Image (tube, rainbow, N blue to C red; front, side, top):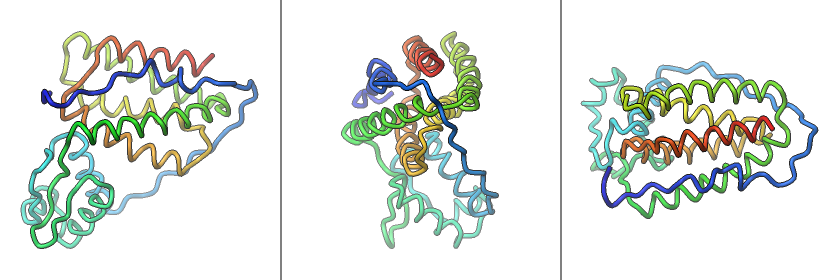
Length: 223
């Protein structure tokens, strides 16, 4: 982990900041059905995952010829998806100089962490108020996968880093999935991936602290 980047702590568990006045009545919130991805959409997701996962590193130049060979996609499609990723702040578009992966900094990390906290606390309040039995089932299932992976990582097995990234994201998504606002869900997802990018670059796993906070979130969700 770069010495100049210090990842923020769990802030005493997000749930403790989102636990005011929980009514007993719960209503369901239907999730949108998944869209069938086109070839361009599939490649977009692959490139995005490689940026968030740290395989495409901050500041790396993204030449279209090399990317065409690596991803097996036409240059016109690559240019379109790279501009899309630039609009999300994950890539810098430099005009005639091409594209490069967005850089990282302590100040940017702090902004992202603060925004994630703000969005997730609001979404948790709403989700805890309206989540039904189906929501509880999603939360339990997501936590089971995450907890199993975290136990292995806490024991020193870091081969599950990619699984941990995916399951951590799925657990937090499950927790807020009943918030009732697709705009909030989409905005949180975009910010969460930027936060997760720092975790993956730093190879940061907070061990017992993370395990404990996730267990507390599960307990609060089911209480």
